[in-house]
Length: 149
Image (tube, rainbow, N blue to C red; front, side, top):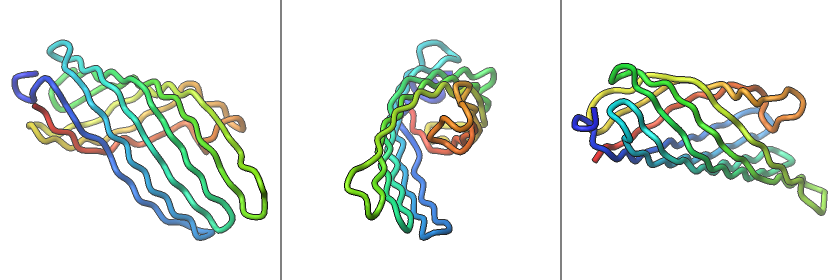
């Protein structure tokens, strides 16, 4: 498999979102991976997410390793540990609220073939705790582009 796609993969995702209460979100998630075995890729990701609402602004940073297993070229299973740290600032308040959270994402998805590939899938954070998490639920989509060399 490494001969078809290259041993190294560089890619990531970019997102823009809008919503109620004047919500605006921008996220950037680069990653770099290496084929350590014919069907096993290991790598690291970093991320940044900016969010603003009518009365608040938030910055969220993340970093962590991942492993992808490809049972066939187009399908992957993923394990991804990610550490999140960030802060929120609310209008009318002098300070900000800081937070940290660990996530262990398990999931999978589909990847198109070739040196330039598009991928999409879903993951679930097995460490997610309702009412204690910075996230509204434990699910996360995976969407992005990667280039092999």
